Image (cartoon, rainbow over all chains, first blue to last red; front, side, top):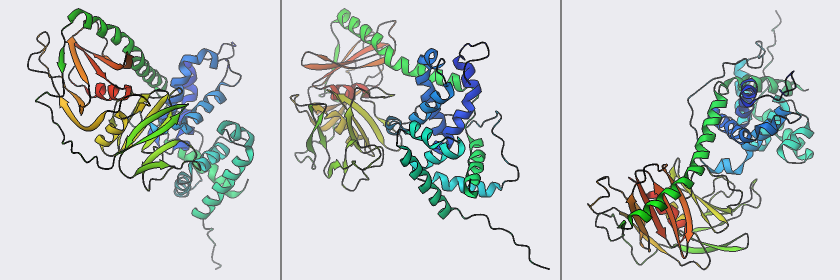
Length: 176
Length: 277
């Protein structure tokens, strides 16, 4: 979401109302925890708030704030200090991305758990690649590493997932 | 896309539906920002108020380590293996005391290489390391220096010279002593082996009878002064600032409290321990 039809940049509350859910979903996949996801997104928004007039005029506001969320997730300072704002359990009531109803929820849950168990740099690369659908080059820019490093992380992450997550067994019909 | 690629995209999309709700997110961010702004900005007002009161009263009550109500811990001659280390931070030599068995951790191969110390056998890459020393110029702390919080462990930080020292330890006394010992080379070493909870005499200030307490080392020249309050005082604590050869921190609510100690870190540690003001 960037400048509206009138050309005016989006105000903070309007932008957060529209894009906050997507930020929280990304943060949830990056952190693997609802509380940490809220913490990371709030941290990014707290930093964005006093500079919103300038951020709102950026060419791609979504990408700018998404980068802030990823930076907040990887911040050493956030890892050191305790969480500031324990929150009650909220679950997203806004419209989430469509989930294929034919998918096996048990298999999906198992794959998500395997993904959560990956080393954090590998999980971050996989989430940005397969959830955000970013190019390797974009992931490299967002995470501050070389593109080759991103490719390596994705490759190693997928290898680990293949090893820990068995593909669904194909039901063979027995001949009658 | 391979089968796993497609399966992973679907699994992540489904997992993302468990994310927290965005409802009220902007207001929650504003609320967090207000708290941060208040904790950083209000202390300036507090400083003015406390200083004003000190001039008006001129006769503060002084809490000292000789107070009978203290809970002194034994200070034996054996220091249990505590030793002093020297670190270089942005060209300044920073000293701190560490318990027996603690030493430097090799974090060169970690994702976040930092100057860290901990007990022998500590995983050097597990954040937070027991003691981390960094330059304070870009520090991003939510709490004031000296505050010790208990989550899984006791954690807190102090500032001294250009450095920030951050400690996480299961034992409050260990975390407190490491932090309180931080000093710039040239500042006097303080005996931190024993601490006491000091409290004021029965005579109170302007009829306000609540007991004020502060925890301070018995072997150090530390003073806590209590002054009558200032009506418009904005509650809060002002971190230590240098006052000639000493450091002073101020607290204010219905009464003003000042803490004076030989080093910045000790001043903030003691100021953070003051209760009942």
